[in-house]
Amino acid sequence: MITFDTTMRVWYCDTDQMGIVHHSNYIRYYEAARSDFMRSMGLSYADVEARGIMMPILEVQSKYRRPALYDEVLTVRVRLDELPAARITFHYEIYNAEGAILNTGMTQLGFMSSTTRRPCRCPEWFLELLRSRWEE
Image: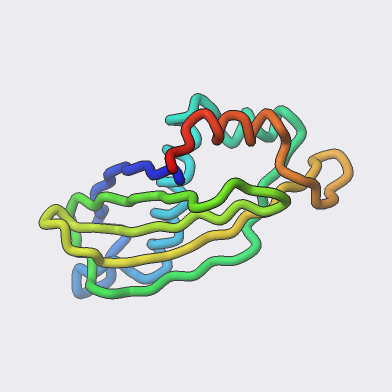
């Protein structure tokens, strides 16, 4: 398992008239946390694509438990429970500063060759990077 935490502040433009984060923004928060996770491993999505691999989203799930509010600092925890094969599944938990869980979610991404645009298995170099950070 790998876990990674990142923080972000809720911007005004992310909220509705009541000052509550609009539901669609949680998926953006997942993406930002995923990108930060990748960068923490020394790899950006641009690096992955430069190596000929694209990672399209195949599935998204999001469960709203409590509202996130304007100007709150959120912690987004990203978790990988299993090493990928042809797909990689990220799990998310979003907390407020008091540690209350606000949202849980999941995204599943596929691996795709950028030249053929066909699905492929997770490249070995990517697996090795994950294995080097894996904790039981």
